[in-house]
Length: 136
Image (cartoon, one colour):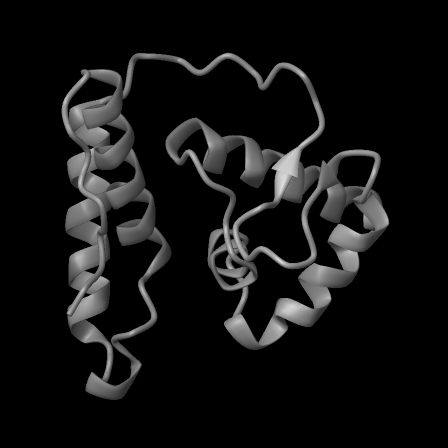
């Protein structure tokens, strides 16, 4: 993958993140959103460093200060299919249940997408969104 593909993936991921969350992600959360392992956060940090001052900025002393420099994020479609969300959730739960017990801290992508869609739906409806969507 070239750096331009990494850049676009990070920008798309951050735009999606900020459509749901008020604060920026930590490096670990950004790794998860990008489908990477937390141990790869140094790689993500290097990619972000090449984008600093152009696309993103942050305070070195604050974990959640990462923000986009672009003025207008892309408009989101307000039509989120409940059926698709339930399919993601069901598929993800089945995948998660099949994982060995010690690997269950790794949330399958389908479950992560389903939870994100559920969270976004509640926000768009003006409902109180859950503070934390973590699996035990």
